[in-house]
Length: 202
Ligand code: NI
Image (cartoon, rainbow, N blue to C red; front, side, top):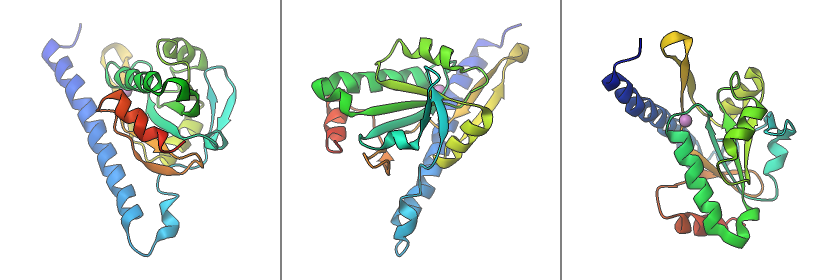
């Protein structure tokens, strides 16, 4: 038996919205910490921190990889029906817009679904997008540590026949070339504008 079509389409709208709202709340907390007077020490730790994951080739990647170039970091999963592929497409267009400077930007797509997202699956999935986008996964504990560090919400949502989807924060974070959090990055604009904004951090 399949789910009624309306319900499925409602879920497609509601889940990303819920994920977005959790992201906004999380960012609100981060912004409060950043903007709160007299507590400058907390700012750098607001979003980001240590992680130990593997890329789509099975190579270990830690937060040390964020040093030297600005990075876009976002969380998702390969079975995501709409938000993740859209974000990956948007980031791909930013790389296109950066042209000869594209190698100066790192991007990390971190899986919130490590049970299904093996390095091999990430590699196949990411082959549809810009080759500079690195997929990261790991065991559940390693992924949980990364989501916690980045204040990302994610939750397994059961579907019929034992299948499931993931509800998750859909924000894209910009980190500067020292690996420090700059802010949530807006991809809802022409790619050339996004590219110009990123180039300020090269
Ligand atoms: Ni997604």
